[in-house]
Length: 121
Image (cartoon, rainbow, N blue to C red; front, side, top):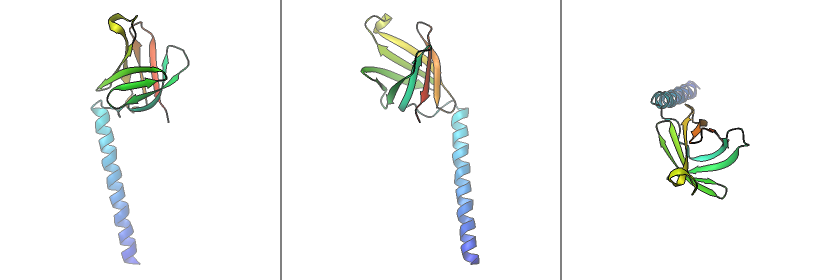
């Protein structure tokens, strides 16, 4: 019985140590301004328009319904480039800041419109 209790106590201590390491890593990423990556499914909105779903794919591609765009992430700065023949330089640019927890972004486009995004859960 004592051996079983000692074994359980060792397992609990190991789990707590691992949890501490993971928390220290999360805090270090936050302090360095490196949020979780943006790949995955999001809701994206412009000004007060209803949000629409989009997907940030690895390699810098965005899929948003029938539209395709490109993205880059440097630190917490997320840049989205939406191809459009009527736009200056051939694309509309959104520049946003990703929240510390990586669950949202907020910024502006070239026209000054407010851009928001929230990670889909």
